[in-house]
Length: 144
Ligand SMILES: [Ca+2]
Ligand SMILES: [Ca+2]
Image (cartoon, rainbow, N blue to C red; front, side, top):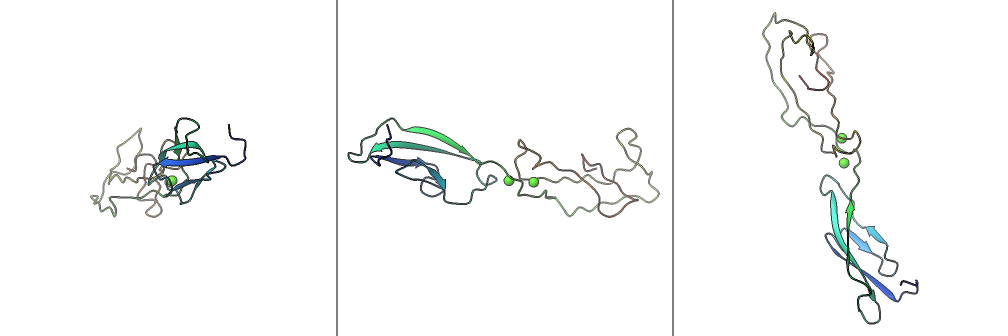
């Protein structure tokens, strides 16, 4: 029904309307007016309606829609329980692998990443040791 002559007025309501999102009341275009952080809030449910600008009467029933915030990789993995302190007896057996777990397990470290685990590799954690070779190694998957 919108002939583009400005006779229709669009209004927005719902979560974050007027604060996070705004609508151009002539075109119906919706814009974000704040920076969005998926880790703070992953989606918003909004409602929009087209009104006759002259009478204020609705032109159609209100429609609901959901805006999902697409993730970017903006969080690095963190060791929430660190710093870790562990002890290992001297002369302990060396070596470790899944096939021959005969070596000495010293500690398991666990890192978490706040990004979306269901999208891409942004939340994927791989463990490696920066210092301490050749005496220590870490399993890249388990952190043992
Ligand atoms: Ca990440
Ligand atoms: Ca993110």
